[in-house]
Image (cartoon, rainbow, N blue to C red; front, top):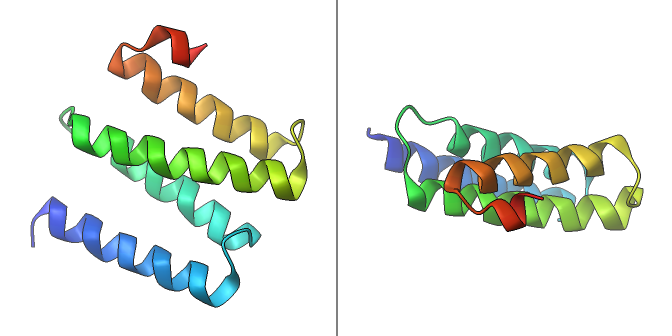
Amino acid sequence: MDDVDKIEDLMALLRRCERALGEENVVALDTLSVLGGLLRNVREYNAALYDKAIELWERCLMGRMNVFGEQHKDTLMSLNNLGIVYQVKGDYVKAL
């Protein structure tokens, strides 16, 4: 099983989690964040995986803003995660 297959398996688990718990459930949002981190931390830079990480963290950020508000530590952590991955991609405007 290669990394792409593993990622697809994790995405399938994420979808099951969201269906079972709801997209804005705290556990589902945490799962989004963790999966985004896994995609960002692959050994070699992979633009497609980073784009997927951004997609997941943006969903997580929106959900956390809705659930917790803009100033909650989990919301701010999601914003930080997005900034880091944008910085690595060289998109410094979005990183700020």
